[in-house]
Amino acid sequence: MRRGGGARWPGSRAQPAGSASAPPPKAKKAATTKSKAKKEDAAAAAVAKESKPPASNPAKDAKAGIPDGAGGVSATAEITGADVAKEVAAKVETEAVKGKKGAKSGKAGSATTETPKTGGSVELEGFGEEVETNDGEKTTLAKLVEESKAGVVLFTYPKASTPGCIKQACLFRDAYSPLSATGLSIYGLSTDSPKSNTTFKTKQKLPYPLLCDPSATLISAIGFKSGKSTTRGVFVVDKSGKVLAADAGGPQATVDIVKEIVEKMGGDGNAEGLQKAEERAGGEGEGAGKSAADTAAEVADTAEKIDA
Image 1 (cartoon, helix red, strand yellow):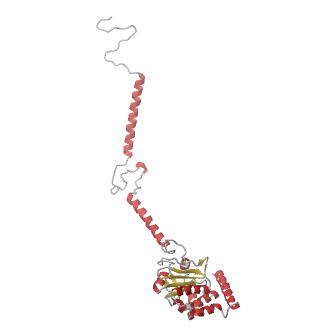
Image 2 (cartoon, one colour; image 1 turned 90 degrees about the vertical axis):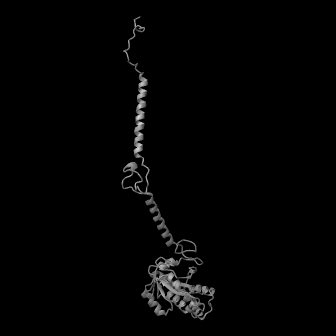
Image 3 (cartoon, one colour; image 1 turned 60 degrees about the vertical axis):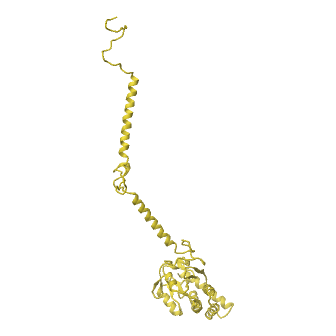
């Protein structure tokens, strides 16, 4: 025992006054790891805070508060909600215009581009685009219908001044008065030039105008374009756009279709002009004469399609 001091065991060392005991090695390592983790969390939070765009008013800030380079947005990427809205509105308007153009034909209430059918209807405005009369006057189906009293008859033919087309045009010529008595306006329609159709009209003394459609826009719209040729037929539409007839057929058949429509409208199906047209179609008599006339018309139609 020493005076003024505590007990001293053998082999032990005296600690200097005021010194603390050293912590165990494992406790020191744990404290260091925890401190390092806190520093890393603080650094990550600082980065996230810098990357997060501050709240802003898109109307005043074109970049929506996003600094240049943050989040992959460059200084040129200034698309705002207003820009997107304008782009969407432009697309909607474009589609609406296409839809309107596509609704020029088809049945009533439908917005399709289907070929007009008997009993259906067409939107007259813009239908078939512009054509030209044999006198050189620009016109449209809508204008022709507007100028008519009850509607329009368009009989189509492959080529002016060829046998089958002469027969068809003359049948409509001979029956012109009774067929137009109820207010229907009659027109011939082909892809021929104004010059060719004028020669045809003058030589055959046709009392109605001939329409020239070199691009076949109207012919296609009413469903009578066949490859490079025009299908012989008749298309009848009234003032409201209702399709009264849209049928292919031979020279006499096209006249008969219009005759039936005229009778339904209160016209005279036994009028002298119609009888004359029927006699012309039948030749000098029944049997061999009529058969020869029909055969000649069929051969002429075939030749016209080859020449077209």
